Image 1 (cartoon, rainbow, N blue to C red):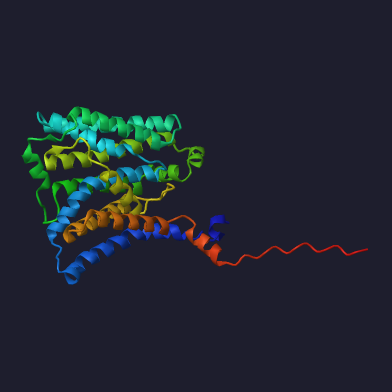
Image 2: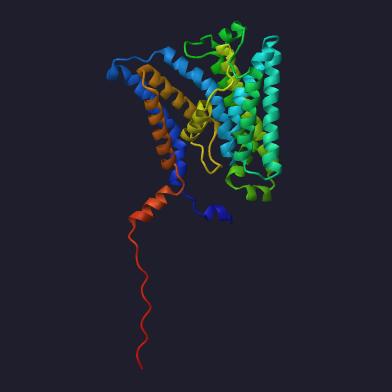
Length: 343
């Protein structure tokens, strides 16, 4: 007789269910707000606004994909910000002579950087945050050195024009490339053993080693994919703007972390997927576009985005319902032991 047939199914934790549906609920709310915008403010959201949001999504969304994958594996990649700055600088500098060669070298450097980060984290059993932070600082310094602390122009305007050409009013080659990247990662995470292994490593690394998962190989691969995705997003943005920035600022990383959490990625690892990450990034892109339509000040954008991130983190916190129930349940003091009878 099968034991599993008699065992009751373990209920899904509320936090897990919230993380599963939260990305799609938030996206539906954002779409509803954009549709209702003319009724509320007299402004109007057009197809171009959706196109513009997808342009942002195609660049920063790939950073989100990289950060989200490392978070699912139980790590965190600060290096995506350094790669986002360094690789576009290489692509623009070399691309002046050969755009294909510049792209290939930039992505090759990204893969090498991700490989080095993964090897250090996996083989030396170090926490990823200080390691990747060090890579970010070093890469930013290298980028400023190459660009002499200035923005570097790219003379191949035709390439940027082709990348930004509108398809079906709301799409471009940039957004189509990003969709292809998300689709590829989704298929791997959903239908291959590697996706299961990435979640297993993020959920319980020691148990993963015991059941035969090649943890080091998984971590190295995750960091390589993270770096390549971030580099691709930065390169496409640099080609579109015909400019490589020596310092892109903190926005790509802030966007990536916020969108990953809104997309249902757990802070403790082991939970999340490419589809949720894509939806979370799209929600945040539409929110930024909404601020642009309303001409909202920067402080309003930061305030609302920060509050949304905190609320999403609290809502998906592990064991939140159990803790709330414990606060509502009155404490019962233990009974005192009986007093022995006097002789």
